[in-house]
Length: 85
Image (cartoon, rainbow, N blue to C red; front, side, top):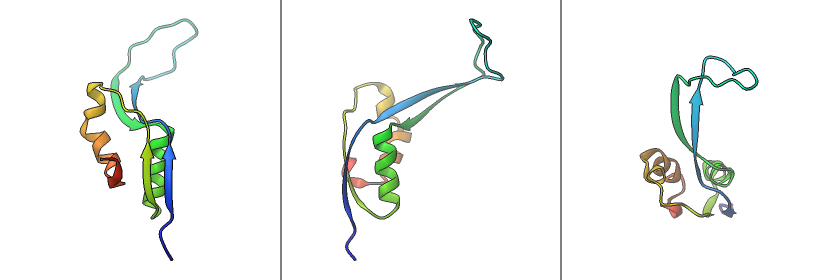
């Protein structure tokens, strides 16, 4: 059986996440204890999932010029399907 060919048109993002010990109360500002960046975007996540299931995947999406886009974690995730790198 031939591998299915899938083209995903969607978003490629870097998620910016702050971890805090608790949720703030209404109107309150609290300090985060940790800051993380992780590759994401609904389109990218769908493309990676399809590739991991064995599909031949192409990804169409806009990527900005921010420093975050060039991070190794994004490149690692995108190498799951070589057509994007």
